Image (cartoon, rainbow, N blue to C red; front, side, top):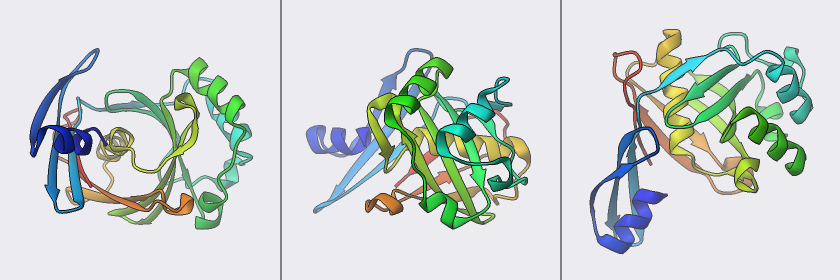
Length: 196
C-alpha cells in the first residue's frame, strides 16, 4: 500500500525507507488506473510461539489443535515486525475466521504481534491467507506484504518446496481479493521481495 501511495504522490520509482531496526525499499508503478507495488523486506526470521500463546490464539479464533495443518507448525514469524502464523486444514475454517476485536487487540498488543496470519495451503506454491489486524484497529487487512514476506521466510526456514516463489491470495473472504507474490532466495534470513 505504501509503494502504491508513493507512486501516486511522487510518480513511479523505488523508495528507500528507514524502519526502527531495518532499511527496506518499496516500489510503486502506475499504468492508467492500475497501481502495482513491491516491498523488499528486512531480513526474515522465524521460531516457535512463546509458551501459552498457541492456546490463546486458538481460543481467540474458536479453533482446536485438530484444525491445524501439521505440515507447517504454528510459529512466530518476522519480516520487519512480528506476526503469528496458524496454518489450517480446511478452506471452510479459513473462510469462517472470526474473533472479538477487543480481545484480539489485547492479545496482539500483549504478545507484540502486528497481525495473526491464518493460512490454507492449496499447493506448494499457492496459499490463501487472512490477516487479523486488531492491533491496527480493524478485523482484517486485505493485503499485507510484510506478513507475506515473513511467511515466505518461514517456509524457506522449514525447507518447504516453494520452488523460489509463492503466490498468496488474501482478502478474498472480505470481498477485497488481492494476489501477492513472494520471491524467495536460498539464503536463510535474507530479505524477501513481495509484489502485488
